[in-house]
Image (tube, rainbow over all chains, first blue to last red; front, side, top):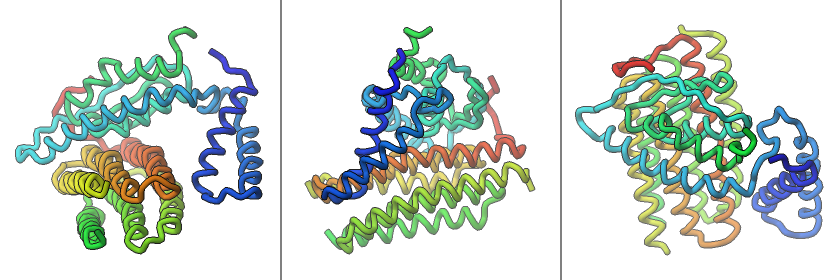
Length: 163
Length: 88
Length: 100
Protein backbone atom coordinates (compact mmCIF):
# COMPACT_ATOMS: atom_id res chain seq x y z
CA UNK A 1 0.00 0.00 0.00
CA UNK A 2 2.05 2.90 -1.31
CA UNK A 3 0.27 6.14 -1.94
CA UNK A 4 1.71 8.16 -4.79
CA UNK A 5 3.51 11.42 -4.18
CA UNK A 6 0.70 13.79 -5.35
CA UNK A 7 -1.85 11.92 -3.25
CA UNK A 8 0.31 12.22 -0.09
CA UNK A 9 1.00 15.86 -0.88
CA UNK A 10 -2.68 16.70 -1.20
CA UNK A 11 -3.51 14.84 2.02
CA UNK A 12 -0.82 16.64 4.03
CA UNK A 13 -1.80 20.02 2.58
CA UNK A 14 -5.47 19.53 3.45
CA UNK A 15 -4.66 18.45 7.02
CA UNK A 16 -2.43 21.50 7.58
CA UNK A 17 -4.94 23.84 5.97
CA UNK A 18 -7.76 22.71 8.26
CA UNK A 19 -5.55 23.50 11.27
CA UNK A 20 -4.83 26.96 9.81
CA UNK A 21 -8.55 27.65 9.25
CA UNK A 22 -9.45 26.68 12.80
CA UNK A 23 -6.64 28.63 14.45
CA UNK A 24 -6.77 31.84 12.42
CA UNK A 25 -10.52 32.37 12.79
CA UNK A 26 -10.73 34.96 10.00
CA UNK A 27 -12.12 33.97 6.66
CA UNK A 28 -11.39 36.92 4.35
CA UNK A 29 -9.49 36.40 1.11
CA UNK A 30 -5.97 37.38 2.14
CA UNK A 31 -5.85 35.18 5.23
CA UNK A 32 -7.19 32.12 3.41
CA UNK A 33 -4.84 32.50 0.43
CA UNK A 34 -1.83 33.11 2.70
CA UNK A 35 -2.71 30.03 4.75
CA UNK A 36 -3.09 27.91 1.66
CA UNK A 37 0.32 28.98 0.35
CA UNK A 38 1.95 28.34 3.74
CA UNK A 39 0.43 24.87 4.13
CA UNK A 40 1.44 23.96 0.57
CA UNK A 41 5.02 24.97 1.34
CA UNK A 42 5.21 23.02 4.60
CA UNK A 43 3.67 19.94 3.00
CA UNK A 44 6.10 20.23 0.05
CA UNK A 45 9.06 20.26 2.43
CA UNK A 46 7.78 17.28 4.44
CA UNK A 47 6.52 14.88 1.77
CA UNK A 48 8.53 12.13 0.18
CA UNK A 49 11.15 11.27 2.82
CA UNK A 50 10.86 7.60 3.77
CA UNK A 51 12.54 8.16 7.15
CA UNK A 52 9.92 10.62 8.35
CA UNK A 53 7.15 9.24 10.58
CA UNK A 54 4.66 11.10 8.42
CA UNK A 55 5.70 9.34 5.24
CA UNK A 56 2.66 7.65 3.77
CA UNK A 57 0.53 8.81 6.68
CA UNK A 58 -3.06 7.54 6.49
CA UNK A 59 -5.02 10.61 7.57
CA UNK A 60 -8.44 9.17 6.73
CA UNK A 61 -8.10 5.81 8.45
CA UNK A 62 -6.97 7.32 11.78
CA UNK A 63 -10.63 8.06 12.46
CA UNK A 64 -11.21 4.34 12.99
CA UNK A 65 -8.53 4.15 15.71
CA UNK A 66 -9.16 7.16 17.93
CA UNK A 67 -12.65 6.32 19.33
CA UNK A 68 -11.42 2.82 20.24
CA UNK A 69 -8.37 4.31 21.99
CA UNK A 70 -10.66 6.69 23.88
CA UNK A 71 -12.73 3.79 25.23
CA UNK A 72 -9.52 2.09 26.41
CA UNK A 73 -8.47 5.33 28.14
CA UNK A 74 -11.79 5.60 30.00
CA UNK A 75 -11.63 1.97 31.15
CA UNK A 76 -8.06 2.08 32.44
CA UNK A 77 -8.60 5.52 34.00
CA UNK A 78 -11.39 4.07 36.09
CA UNK A 79 -9.16 1.15 37.07
CA UNK A 80 -6.36 3.52 38.13
CA UNK A 81 -8.85 5.61 40.11
CA UNK A 82 -9.96 2.59 42.12
CA UNK A 83 -6.31 1.74 42.79
CA UNK A 84 -5.44 5.23 44.05
CA UNK A 85 -8.54 5.58 46.23
CA UNK A 86 -8.07 2.13 47.75
CA UNK A 87 -6.51 2.57 51.22
CA UNK A 88 -4.33 -0.53 50.79
CA UNK A 89 -2.78 0.84 47.54
CA UNK A 90 -2.60 -2.51 45.67
CA UNK A 91 0.11 -1.72 43.11
CA UNK A 92 2.49 -4.22 41.50
CA UNK A 93 4.82 -2.14 39.34
CA UNK A 94 7.12 -3.90 36.90
CA UNK A 95 9.14 -3.29 33.76
CA UNK A 96 8.43 -5.39 30.71
CA UNK A 97 9.92 -5.52 27.24
CA UNK A 98 7.57 -5.66 24.30
CA UNK A 99 8.67 -6.48 20.77
CA UNK A 100 6.43 -5.05 18.10
CA UNK A 101 6.25 -6.19 14.50
CA UNK A 102 5.25 -2.83 13.07
CA UNK A 103 7.48 -1.58 10.25
CA UNK A 104 6.04 1.85 9.60
CA UNK A 105 7.78 4.44 11.78
CA UNK A 106 4.57 6.39 12.20
CA UNK A 107 2.91 3.22 13.49
CA UNK A 108 5.65 2.75 16.12
CA UNK A 109 5.20 6.41 17.06
CA UNK A 110 1.46 5.95 17.47
CA UNK A 111 2.01 2.76 19.49
CA UNK A 112 4.34 4.49 21.95
CA UNK A 113 2.07 7.48 22.19
CA UNK A 114 -0.99 5.31 22.85
CA UNK A 115 0.86 3.34 25.54
CA UNK A 116 1.85 6.55 27.31
CA UNK A 117 -1.56 8.17 26.91
CA UNK A 118 -3.33 5.21 28.49
CA UNK A 119 -3.13 5.59 32.29
CA UNK A 120 -1.37 2.66 33.94
CA UNK A 121 1.28 2.04 31.30
CA UNK A 122 4.11 4.30 30.17
CA UNK A 123 6.79 3.93 27.52
CA UNK A 124 10.18 4.09 29.21
CA UNK A 125 12.52 3.53 26.26
CA UNK A 126 12.22 2.78 22.56
CA UNK A 127 15.05 0.94 20.82
CA UNK A 128 14.12 0.12 17.26
CA UNK A 129 11.19 -2.24 17.64
CA UNK A 130 11.83 -3.12 21.28
CA UNK A 131 9.72 -1.04 23.62
CA UNK A 132 10.35 -1.04 27.37
CA UNK A 133 7.09 -0.44 29.21
CA UNK A 134 6.46 0.31 32.86
CA UNK A 135 3.09 -1.02 34.01
CA UNK A 136 1.44 -0.40 37.36
CA UNK A 137 -0.26 -3.81 37.62
CA UNK A 138 -1.38 -6.77 35.53
CA UNK A 139 -4.71 -5.36 34.44
CA UNK A 140 -3.07 -2.37 32.76
CA UNK A 141 -0.54 -4.40 30.83
CA UNK A 142 -3.05 -7.07 29.76
CA UNK A 143 -4.08 -5.21 26.61
CA UNK A 144 -0.54 -4.63 25.47
CA UNK A 145 0.71 -8.18 26.04
CA UNK A 146 -2.24 -9.74 24.26
CA UNK A 147 -1.38 -7.50 21.30
CA UNK A 148 -4.76 -5.81 20.84
CA UNK A 149 -3.30 -2.32 20.35
CA UNK A 150 -0.82 -3.60 17.80
CA UNK A 151 -3.47 -5.48 15.84
CA UNK A 152 -5.62 -2.36 15.72
CA UNK A 153 -2.68 -0.26 14.51
CA UNK A 154 -1.59 -2.73 11.85
CA UNK A 155 -5.17 -2.70 10.64
CA UNK A 156 -5.03 1.09 10.38
CA UNK A 157 -1.68 1.15 8.60
CA UNK A 158 -2.52 -1.93 6.50
CA UNK A 159 0.69 -3.71 7.41
CA UNK A 160 -0.73 -7.19 6.93
CA UNK A 161 -0.89 -6.88 3.17
CA UNK A 162 2.67 -5.63 2.90
CA UNK A 163 4.24 -8.47 4.88
CA UNK B 1 -22.84 30.16 36.02
CA UNK B 2 -20.08 32.66 36.71
CA UNK B 3 -19.97 31.61 40.37
CA UNK B 4 -19.51 28.01 39.29
CA UNK B 5 -16.55 28.93 37.10
CA UNK B 6 -15.00 30.94 39.94
CA UNK B 7 -15.36 27.85 42.15
CA UNK B 8 -13.63 25.77 39.47
CA UNK B 9 -10.77 28.29 39.38
CA UNK B 10 -10.34 28.11 43.17
CA UNK B 11 -10.33 24.30 43.11
CA UNK B 12 -7.73 24.24 40.35
CA UNK B 13 -5.53 26.62 42.35
CA UNK B 14 -5.71 24.34 45.37
CA UNK B 15 -4.70 21.40 43.16
CA UNK B 16 -1.73 23.43 41.91
CA UNK B 17 -0.67 23.81 45.57
CA UNK B 18 -0.68 20.01 45.94
CA UNK B 19 1.64 19.67 42.94
CA UNK B 20 3.81 22.48 44.33
CA UNK B 21 4.31 20.38 47.48
CA UNK B 22 5.69 17.62 45.26
CA UNK B 23 7.95 20.10 43.45
CA UNK B 24 9.41 21.45 46.69
CA UNK B 25 9.55 18.17 48.58
CA UNK B 26 10.32 15.64 45.82
CA UNK B 27 13.07 13.16 46.69
CA UNK B 28 14.70 13.19 43.23
CA UNK B 29 14.96 15.90 40.61
CA UNK B 30 12.69 13.93 38.25
CA UNK B 31 9.83 14.23 40.73
CA UNK B 32 10.19 17.98 40.50
CA UNK B 33 10.12 17.94 36.68
CA UNK B 34 7.04 15.70 36.76
CA UNK B 35 5.32 18.08 39.18
CA UNK B 36 6.10 21.04 36.92
CA UNK B 37 4.57 19.13 34.00
CA UNK B 38 1.38 18.63 36.00
CA UNK B 39 1.31 22.32 36.98
CA UNK B 40 1.63 23.42 33.36
CA UNK B 41 -1.28 21.21 32.32
CA UNK B 42 -3.33 22.79 35.11
CA UNK B 43 -2.26 26.24 33.91
CA UNK B 44 -3.52 25.53 30.39
CA UNK B 45 -6.92 24.43 31.71
CA UNK B 46 -6.96 27.43 34.07
CA UNK B 47 -6.36 29.86 31.21
CA UNK B 48 -9.27 28.50 29.20
CA UNK B 49 -11.56 28.76 32.27
CA UNK B 50 -10.41 32.35 32.95
CA UNK B 51 -11.13 33.23 29.33
CA UNK B 52 -14.64 31.85 29.76
CA UNK B 53 -15.21 33.96 32.88
CA UNK B 54 -14.03 37.21 31.28
CA UNK B 55 -15.70 36.34 27.92
CA UNK B 56 -12.52 36.86 25.92
CA UNK B 57 -11.98 33.28 24.85
CA UNK B 58 -10.17 33.95 21.57
CA UNK B 59 -7.29 35.73 23.30
CA UNK B 60 -6.90 33.28 26.18
CA UNK B 61 -7.21 30.18 24.00
CA UNK B 62 -4.45 31.48 21.73
CA UNK B 63 -2.25 32.17 24.75
CA UNK B 64 -2.84 28.66 26.09
CA UNK B 65 -1.93 27.15 22.70
CA UNK B 66 1.35 29.04 22.72
CA UNK B 67 1.95 28.02 26.33
CA UNK B 68 1.45 24.35 25.48
CA UNK B 69 4.01 24.54 22.66
CA UNK B 70 6.56 26.46 24.77
CA UNK B 71 6.06 23.99 27.60
CA UNK B 72 6.97 21.14 25.24
CA UNK B 73 10.24 22.80 24.21
CA UNK B 74 11.21 23.64 27.81
CA UNK B 75 10.39 20.19 29.17
CA UNK B 76 12.32 18.44 26.38
CA UNK B 77 15.37 20.65 27.01
CA UNK B 78 15.28 19.95 30.76
CA UNK B 79 14.86 16.20 30.18
CA UNK B 80 17.75 16.10 27.70
CA UNK B 81 19.99 18.00 30.12
CA UNK B 82 19.15 15.72 33.04
CA UNK B 83 19.72 12.66 30.88
CA UNK B 84 23.24 13.84 30.05
CA UNK B 85 24.11 14.87 33.58
CA UNK B 86 22.95 11.71 35.30
CA UNK B 87 21.68 11.20 38.80
CA UNK B 88 22.82 13.42 41.63
CA UNK C 1 -26.75 22.06 27.38
CA UNK C 2 -25.48 23.89 30.44
CA UNK C 3 -26.32 20.95 32.69
CA UNK C 4 -24.29 18.54 30.56
CA UNK C 5 -21.40 21.02 30.59
CA UNK C 6 -21.48 21.38 34.39
CA UNK C 7 -21.65 17.60 34.82
CA UNK C 8 -18.67 17.07 32.51
CA UNK C 9 -16.62 19.73 34.32
CA UNK C 10 -17.43 18.15 37.69
CA UNK C 11 -16.36 14.70 36.44
CA UNK C 12 -13.14 16.20 35.13
CA UNK C 13 -12.48 17.93 38.45
CA UNK C 14 -12.97 14.59 40.19
CA UNK C 15 -10.30 12.98 38.02
CA UNK C 16 -7.93 15.91 38.58
CA UNK C 17 -8.44 15.54 42.33
CA UNK C 18 -7.75 11.79 42.17
CA UNK C 19 -4.56 12.51 40.21
CA UNK C 20 -3.41 14.98 42.88
CA UNK C 21 -4.08 12.39 45.62
CA UNK C 22 -2.10 9.84 43.60
CA UNK C 23 0.74 12.34 43.27
CA UNK C 24 0.89 12.44 47.08
CA UNK C 25 0.40 8.76 47.81
CA UNK C 26 2.31 6.80 45.16
CA UNK C 27 5.85 5.75 46.11
CA UNK C 28 8.30 6.54 43.27
CA UNK C 29 8.77 8.49 40.03
CA UNK C 30 7.58 5.78 37.67
CA UNK C 31 4.30 5.22 39.46
CA UNK C 32 3.72 8.95 39.94
CA UNK C 33 3.97 9.44 36.21
CA UNK C 34 0.83 7.29 35.86
CA UNK C 35 -1.03 9.79 38.03
CA UNK C 36 0.16 12.65 35.81
CA UNK C 37 -0.99 10.81 32.70
CA UNK C 38 -4.41 10.38 34.33
CA UNK C 39 -4.54 14.18 34.62
CA UNK C 40 -3.47 14.68 31.04
CA UNK C 41 -5.86 12.31 29.39
CA UNK C 42 -9.23 12.08 31.05
CA UNK C 43 -9.22 15.07 33.42
CA UNK C 44 -8.26 17.62 30.77
CA UNK C 45 -10.57 15.96 28.27
CA UNK C 46 -13.65 16.22 30.49
CA UNK C 47 -13.02 19.81 31.65
CA UNK C 48 -12.21 21.20 28.19
CA UNK C 49 -15.07 19.26 26.58
CA UNK C 50 -17.47 20.72 29.12
CA UNK C 51 -16.19 24.24 28.42
CA UNK C 52 -16.53 23.80 24.67
CA UNK C 53 -20.10 22.53 25.11
CA UNK C 54 -20.83 25.60 27.24
CA UNK C 55 -19.71 27.87 24.39
CA UNK C 56 -21.92 26.09 21.88
CA UNK C 57 -20.96 25.29 18.31
CA UNK C 58 -18.71 27.89 16.72
CA UNK C 59 -15.14 29.06 16.39
CA UNK C 60 -14.46 28.98 20.12
CA UNK C 61 -15.48 25.33 20.39
CA UNK C 62 -13.17 24.38 17.52
CA UNK C 63 -10.28 26.28 19.10
CA UNK C 64 -10.73 24.60 22.46
CA UNK C 65 -10.78 21.27 20.62
CA UNK C 66 -7.46 22.20 18.99
CA UNK C 67 -5.98 22.91 22.44
CA UNK C 68 -7.29 19.51 23.59
CA UNK C 69 -5.73 17.80 20.56
CA UNK C 70 -2.41 19.51 21.29
CA UNK C 71 -2.56 18.30 24.90
CA UNK C 72 -3.22 14.74 23.76
CA UNK C 73 -0.34 14.94 21.29
CA UNK C 74 2.29 16.71 23.40
CA UNK C 75 1.80 15.56 26.98
CA UNK C 76 2.71 11.89 26.35
CA UNK C 77 5.91 13.16 24.70
CA UNK C 78 6.81 15.19 27.81
CA UNK C 79 6.03 12.34 30.20
CA UNK C 80 8.02 9.89 28.07
CA UNK C 81 11.02 12.26 27.89
CA UNK C 82 11.06 12.74 31.67
CA UNK C 83 10.76 9.04 32.42
CA UNK C 84 13.38 8.12 29.84
CA UNK C 85 15.77 10.62 31.41
CA UNK C 86 15.10 9.06 34.83
CA UNK C 87 15.67 5.55 33.45
CA UNK C 88 18.85 6.39 31.58
CA UNK C 89 20.24 8.37 34.51
CA UNK C 90 20.19 5.10 36.43
CA UNK C 91 17.07 5.34 38.55
CA UNK C 92 15.56 1.87 38.90
CA UNK C 93 11.87 1.41 39.61
CA UNK C 94 10.96 -0.54 42.69
CA UNK C 95 9.55 -3.80 41.44
CA UNK C 96 7.69 -6.30 43.54
CA UNK C 97 6.32 -7.99 40.45
CA UNK C 98 8.67 -10.20 38.48
CA UNK C 99 10.54 -8.83 35.50
CA UNK C 100 9.75 -10.36 32.12
